[in-house]
Length: 355
Ligand code: TXA
Ligand code: MG
Image (cartoon, rainbow, N blue to C red; front, top):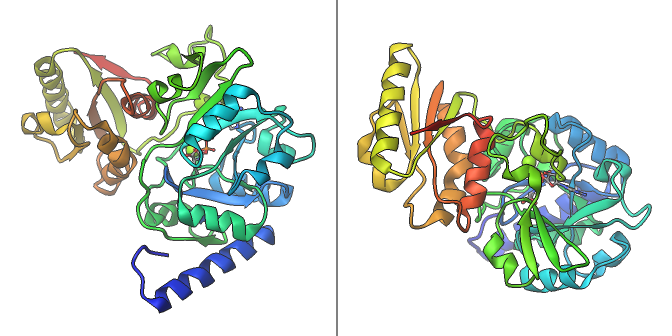
């Protein structure tokens, strides 16, 4: 389903959405575009269908799925309670890239969706095809990102095909996604404080305008991540290696761009001497510094939306080029930069080179 339209194309798109909706209603698994990344959907109430998602992705079963809805009436049966702050956030950001963790209504979704928790993550995507598909399915749609577990999330239908062809029932092609990183996962406390469990498409700065305060889940604040004395992340998905390209990735941090560039160049020399196929992920401002087998840009440091939009496709592009060792520049953790750095650090298994 593409965005250009003759009458026949529109009719074909309608037909495709009706078919995909019927597949979901019948217990199938269908990948579809959202404004963030492609999701792999199934009827959230149907345990066999939800199990097919976990099987197709190779996803650990203790990692709960986000439930997608097309309108507010679907929320009623799904959750037990919505506090005032959660309500304000919905009004401000739905449809949009914000997942709210809410108390689940008993029996509303398969226990496989919530991984046994008494909460459910819910969002209403800001994407016409997604909304129409969910409406056509006539059920709440559980959908994780439509990648094999551990791989970068898909921002093109092609990425879904590469990871999941033969493992799922269908893909709705809606062209490239917009935001490029996943939704922000957050929980609103009765005290009006919002806890960010996973940074994403809605920034902390945006949330702060509609809440008494915003804090990051404690487990997100450890740059090292995964140290044994750290609290377990409250979004269970945050504890797994994720978003990773096949090559080894290192993030290079440092306040002075010249020193970062020098460190990357030294690493590149050493890697080339070991016979690695080298890659650099950098910002436009510093591209001329680097000579590697594959140098990719995340756009300008002054426009981090572009970095979010391009990140996952870039990580997959290194794979396609056979790159075995990748050095990535870091960016300020402001606005969407927080989500970009979160994904980069996770993709690198938190191995950081400090310049
Ligand atoms: O943008 C997105 O959110 C995409 C699109 C397809 O909507 N979906 C997505 O799903 O990223 P997934 O499964 O890849 O990531 C879901 C994240 C995981 O980190 C999971 O642990 C967390 O949300 N999560 C889901 N339900 C939760 C809950 N009840 N409590 C805490 N965290 C939850
Ligand atoms: Mg995912």
